[in-house]
Length: 96
View 1 (cartoon, rainbow, N blue to C red):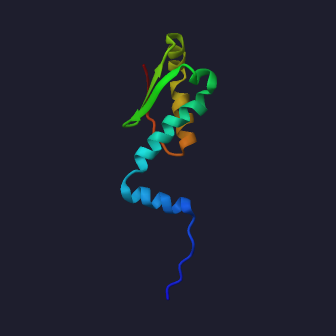
View 2 (cartoon, rainbow, N blue to C red):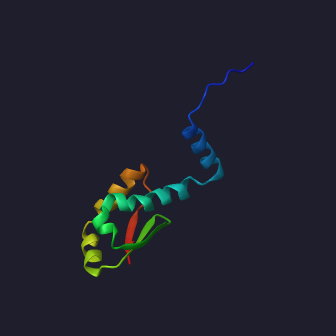
View 3 (cartoon, one colour):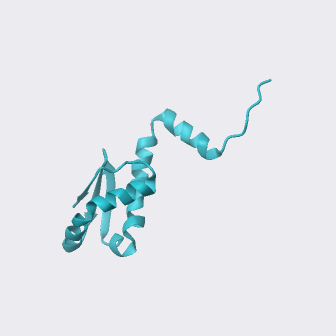
């Protein structure tokens, strides 16, 4: 009889996600959700919509001056979001 060792539920879920090909879309969702944690509540309150499409994070803002200011720290935001997700998901941010 073959002896099997217990696995953590997280490892089982990760294996199932890999087999189903859903890892990339899950990481995109994590990156989109990480926006609120990275920028904080004061900036997130001006965010109306955000999503990741093929490595590009699209962020819709209601404040034009804020959109301009965030453009200056775009690279740092990309690094912070990818660091929080744990995988390089976001390669560019587009502010709308």
